[in-house]
Image (cartoon, rainbow, N blue to C red; front, top):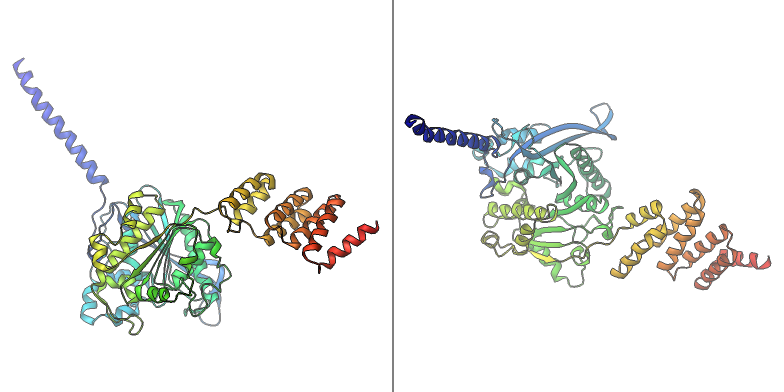
Amino acid sequence: MRSQGSGKPVLALISSFIVLIIFFSGFFLYAPAAFSADLWGSLKAGPYAPGFRLIKTEDPSRSYPAGGGGRIGPRPMWLYLWYPAQRSSRQPLDLATYVRLATEEGGLPVPLKKGLTEDRLKGLLTRQTAAIGEAEPAAGKFPLLVLGQGLYYESPFSHFVLCEFLASHGYVVATCPLVGTLYRLVNINPEDLETEIRDMEFVLAKARELSFVDRQKTGVIGYDLGGIAGLVLSMRRPEVSAFFSMDCSILTPHWSGLPNNHPSYREDRFVIPWMYMSQARFIEALRQQASSSTLWDRKTFGDSFLVPVPTSCHGQFSSYAMLGIKDAVPGYWGPIEGDPRLLHEAICGLALDFFDAYIRQDRSALTRLHEAGQSSNLGATGIKVNFKKGQAPPPSEAEIVRLIIEKGVREVRPIVERARAAYPSHTVCGEGVLNWLGAHFLYWWGREKEAVEVFELNVSLYPKSANAYDSLGEAYLAVGETEKGIANYRKSLELNPQNRTAAEIIKKYEKK
């Protein structure tokens, strides 16, 4: 009995030891992978190791020169993916491998060759990044961020620090090189801007096919020309829920007229949260032009952040700021003031807080954004974040039209009336759009009685439009309600005495 009793503490100790082994083995099994992030400066890694994957594919819907002899083939597409990864025994990529993957010819990007001495470049290329090539994705689904590249920074290598950092915090970042429509050169015109937008849309579509991407959470990042493309993309793709732009000409039109001269530029559709950061000198110059109205001034819906960055160097918005590069593109970069790494770290931190606040709905991240400029880190850089509260957006014109087609005017009219009351200065649905919809109901879709309801809605929204009454009169006659038809033609003629068609129809029915 005595020996059995003395054994209980030993058994208990062994049991506890086994439990501890199981616990710690589980901890190490599921703990985030350790990785090198010495090129990140003081940026704090998230709970995941950043994985990296290069996917070579093509877009068969577009053509591109396929070599000599005038041969044409599908547009080649290189997709670069950074994503939250599982623990891996693989070593992170060194900078030389990254550069080789990022450029088709395997050569060094020009800013690297021009901005560093040969000795410094040689040492830099041997350093490890944080990205683990072809690592297994972490379990779960993660928000997608599509990145648009800039001129002279066409390689996705230009923002590898930002992409790795966001991937470590649970985002999938997808991008592709910036290449012109029919040759490598990118022109600053609507055609080549459309090409970059379509490239970003292709990247978005391909990335959303991945099993670890959350299709319901999508944001856009844009730098330089990629910021112009990102703005238009945000206007025409309703699944984009937040836009982060860096040093691009979108507050007012660029000297080329972009993006305003692009056919998809619609400010009424820019209703998502937006953070615009640019060199402080450019923002200040616009502020001094009291007569100028900027996109920041005009944007009504969705929260907006304006971030003047105290630098004259365009390159400090890119990962080159973390590599010690100076004067890579003289006359374009401008002088580097202060510590470029500290500035770029602040830019990356603001990007994370912005997407956490508006894609993940993280209230603590939103609080940090409101307090930005007060923290020691941002205070040291001189960055101040301006905030403008935006209204919740009304239903879009596209949503209104879709609902009318699917459910009819009677179901949709209360939605329209609530939107009119809440947003008296906002165009809920364009007169021409409703008129064209009513014509389809009347002549092509066999829904004549519903056409009358569409035109009645149009008249209620645009009571001073002669054309709206003209169309309503036409619909009433088509369904056999002659008196109402003539009454509406009379109203149209009253508003526009030059409406000869209305006058002739009224005369014709008066004779009868």
